[in-house]
Image 1 (cartoon, rainbow, N blue to C red):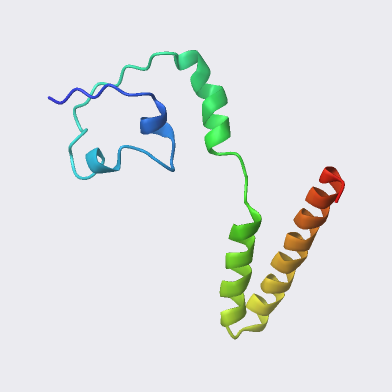
Image 2 (image 1 turned 120 degrees about the vertical axis):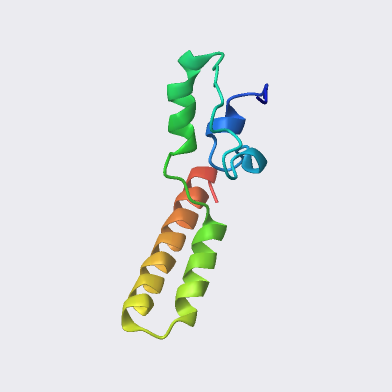
Amino acid sequence: MNLVVCDYNYVFDPTIGLRALLHGDALRDAVLIIDEAHNLVDRSREYYSPEIGTSSLERARQFLETLSNPVFDELAGLVADLEREVRDRVADSLGD
């Protein structure tokens, strides 16, 4: 049996995780003990909060623009609108 001691971010955060140990049956019989579990609800909300940056929007728009389909063209336009809205709001909040 393996013993892993770490912050629970390494277990629950979808962006980091214990990737090397999650393959196959490596953790099949593992026992997980969570210290500071009372913080887990708030932390998990942060993990799965809907958040997207302008660079992700730009990449999505650029990808959609490579597809020749009217539906994807419409989506690319909507993503471009969202990019502008985000940039405008950031500029407004920073005072240009």
